[in-house]
Each structure stands twice: as structure tokens, then as C-alpha cells.
Amino acid sequence: MISRRQAVKNSAAVTGMLLAAGLLPHAAFAFNKAAFDAKTVAEVMKAMGGGAPTESKDVTLTAPDIAENGAVVPLGAATTLPNVKHILLLVEKNPNTLVASFDVSDAVEPNFLTRAKLGQTSDVYAVAITNDGKALFAKKEVKVTLGGCGG
Image 1 (tube, helix red, strand yellow):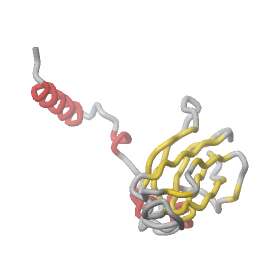
Image 2 (image 1 turned 90 degrees about the horizontal axis):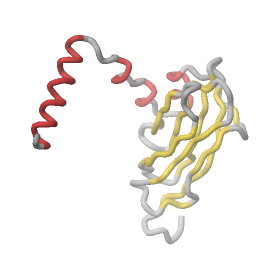
Image 3 (image 1 turned 135 degrees about the vertical axis):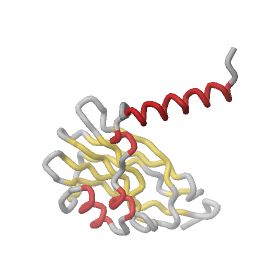
Image 4 (image 1 turned 60 degrees about the vertical axis):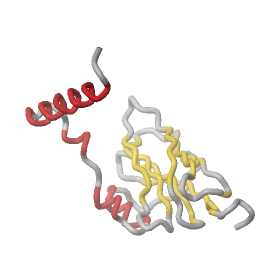
């Protein structure tokens, strides 16, 4: 019977050999650094190749009205729009605005849930970017409290 430590060592060795041979896709390790370093919604949209965002009922944002613990705020984004290539979660007053970016294809249902850190009360955006560069969003203010006793 193989130990857990040996299994991890073997997995790391196999991954290293596959990387060295060029058999793992480099896209799996790629991300848009400019978008994640952006400080405003406009900078994120520019880095992701989207136009000026417009509000849409076809994009849904799931977020609490009041977050008792800003360190783990549950956020969700979904859309019913066709031809979506990216779904983004943005927190306007965070040091880095882009919280999450999801790549979408016809094989993926555009419905995502995650948790994010909110430093303070802020507007949160769910943005869907279509293949032709249109950006559509839903927005909600999330209040962050220390003990959940007010805003």
C-alpha cells in the first residue's frame, strides 16, 4: 500500500515530467494579470476586452444585503445570455477590483458561486462579457459589519 506522502511525491514527479515535455497546456496556468491588478471597474473592462458595461436583467448577482464577516462573503453570478465568454465578479472598493473571472463556453453553464473578501461596504458587480465584446452587468450594495448589528 502506497503512503500519502509517496503518492504526492509521485504526482509531483509526473507533473514535472509532463511540463518538461510540453504536454500540459500553458493556458491552464495563465491568467489576465492586468485585469486582476486593475483598481477600477473601467480598468478591468479594458483589460478583459469588454466595452462600457450596461445594466441587464439577463445577468444575475447573488450576494447578501449585509455581510457579518467581510472575510468570507458568498457571491454568485449567472446569466441567460447567449455567446458569453467571461463572467466576472467585481468589488468596487477592494484594493483589486476583480475578485473572480470565469471563462465560459457552450459546454459550461454560466452559473458560478464563490466566496470573496470585502474590506468595507461596497458595490458588487456581476459582469457578463459576450463574444462580440458587449459587457452587461448586475449590481448590488453589500454592507460589511463587524458583528452584523448595523451598517
